[in-house]
Each structure stands twice: as structure tokens, then as C-alpha cells.
Length: 310
Image (cartoon, rainbow, N blue to C red; front, top):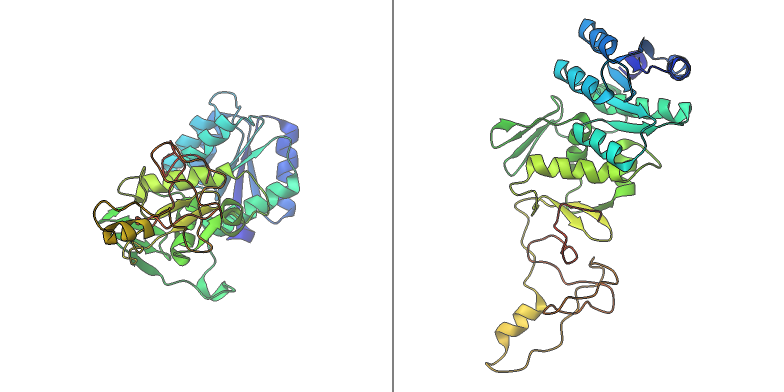
């Protein structure tokens, strides 16, 4: 698919459209062009492309509306290419489900690499063409069922509406339960980028939690490990042992003074340089924290498990 894919380039700047078209064509991709919102939607309605490279500042219809209308036609991967470089615009585009976001000025070679990465993940090669052994076609994780061949995710009998990148992220987490990954590592493994905006990962994790967690504000599957990244916990994994302080408290005679706060196990992850609020135990000077019985690392005070950066 990657070498025969058709890309719809939507940009009202003739010079930008020409450069993007030249580089994508040189990379072996077929390219169609549209210079405004209505013609882009009409072109997609006539023949759905395999990938859309979409400028946001378009005459007729803005890029966000064009994106919504094209996505109504089918699950087409979209790379947003725009001069709008503010964080709010990037987050809005990613929250809508865009697969990538590139700001102008940009490197045409980088755009080609990102286009190929999006195409590989949206249209995976047949098993006989894959270099690595394929993962099991169907996996069950609690009330979640992942169908790798059909690229479907079902939760409690209902099919989830996931973008191609959200499905890739969920599949990667499911392949590596219990392992902690930084956002940089997730960009490398899931997006195929050696560098990029790490807020892309934050937005996708939040959107994924909203779709697979019973309570996205208190996630049980995708845990935030503060100061590091994210970890995928299997729902039937063994519970962590009780907190050492809780064990010692249960064993103390009534009225006995509490011992100093016990340190967590070597290598445990916790907030670094945190100051404990009144009424809570002080952080361990070693920089480690005792395991949370819930199986997720505790966020800093005032932060919930699904907001902000790890």
C-alpha cells in the first residue's frame, strides 16, 4: 500500500502545494491537489484518498471543517500542514483525531518520512511481508478485545471508534504490559519519529483513556508514572502488596508511636523533588516512592491521573 498510495494535498499556496507534490511523487506516491475547502471535499467524495495532507487556513471552508467532512466519508489518515503553530491549534487538531501535525516552515523530506510512517500504520503489510512475527490477531484484555487483522477494538460488546494512531498506541501498550515508556520512546515506537512534539503523545493518551477506561480521571489501564511516562496495566494483574507503613501500623500495639515513613523498594518511580503538603508523609530522600496499592503511581498534589505531563 505504501508504495502505491494516493495522497490528496490540500493547500491554497501554489508554491507549497508544488513542493509537497514534487517530494511525495519522487517518493513513489500518487498525488492529487486541491486549492480550497470545497474542492478538497468534492475530490474526496469522488474518490477517497489513502492519505490527506491538509492545510488549515483555506478559502471556502477552513481545514478543521474539511477534516470533519472527509472523515465522515471514511477513516482516512490526515496530516495537518499549517502555519498555525500555537499549542492550542496543535492540540485541537490532534484531539479531532489527526494522525500528525506539521507546522510551516517545514522540511519536505521530513514530511515524506512522516507520510510514509502514517501510511505504514494505517495500512499494515500482510503477514507474509512483515519482517517481524505478527502479534496474535485477536487479544482479550478484561472487557477489551483487540482484533489486529481487522483493526477493531471492542469494549463490553461495543465497537470503539479509534483513529489509526489510537489503535496503534493501544496495540503497543497491550504488547508491552507492565513496562514504562517515556513519551519520547512512544514517539519512536508508535509514531516512528526520532524527534517531535511530545504533547502529541499526551493528547492521544488522554483520548484513548476516554474511550477505554471506566473512569478516565482515575485510569486503571493506562497509568501515569510521574516524572517518567506511561505504563499499561493488565486488569487482572496481581495487586501490589500493602504499603509498608500500613503493615507496621496494623502490627503496632494500641497507642504506640508510628515509626518513620518506610522507603519504597529500590528503583520505584515517584515525583522528583516533591514537597509533601500538610497531613501527608514526606517524600523519601532517595527520590523513590512506595508502591501505590492501586497499581498506578500517585500524581503530584492537585493533579489527576489523566491530565498534564508525566
